[in-house]
View 1: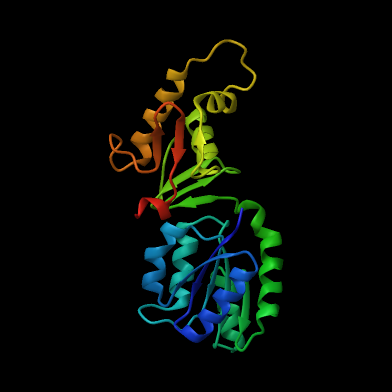
View 2: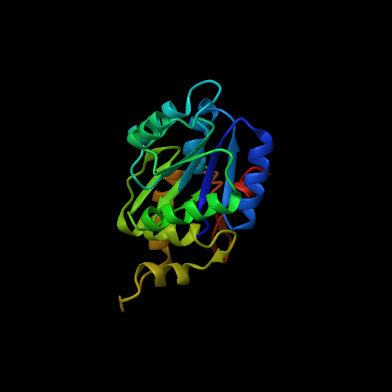
Amino acid sequence: MQQQILLVDPNTQWTEKLAAFLSENSFIVTVTSSAEQAMEIFHQSYPCMVIMELKLPNGSGEMFCKWIRANQTADVSIIMVTEKNHVEDKINGLTIGADDYLTKPVYLEELLAHMHAVLRRTGLFCQKIIHNGLCIKPRKGEVYLNGAPIQLTKHEFMLLYYLMDHPNQIISREALIEQLYPNIEKEIFDRSIDAHIKKLRAKIEVDRKQPKRIVTVRGEGYKYIPDEEQKR
């Protein structure tokens, strides 16, 4: 799974350069310029790592860091890359929750090395799939929709994970039965999958009667539509 990075910095020249570099190194990057915007984006992108400047408009980087730590678990890593270069700033940044602290200017390759070092410690717990505000964490067995936790049964979770892990692919009911009941010899009817899908839609769709995420392909099965397709 590609890891999602949220880059928060008002310096557009720096963010464009860094975002392009990180994309070339197989990261998915979301860019914003203020703490206020970052908080709005956070529950849509569910980043594995936040790279932030501390000098931000509409709220400080320190405030945003505290907000993350107050609202999220340790599976979100934070690297502060900032113009604040006093020892007191570094101590404060690490104390309030940053995993690493670098002062500008910094070489892109050096930042990448620090990112890999942090992710070696925390990235194991940041296995997630994100589509349009819906986030599933297979290692933790957790699902969130726009930041709010969703309670799923074991079979609903397995079904959602398999569909989200195979976006835009038509999955037959037979294939879904094999995923949910691999070791059961008795016959599992297609309608049991339909029942799971119905309950799942009630929890993740805006309108379960007109689903946008999990759609039925008549005569073939089901298909999960990621956010890019939903917006069309």
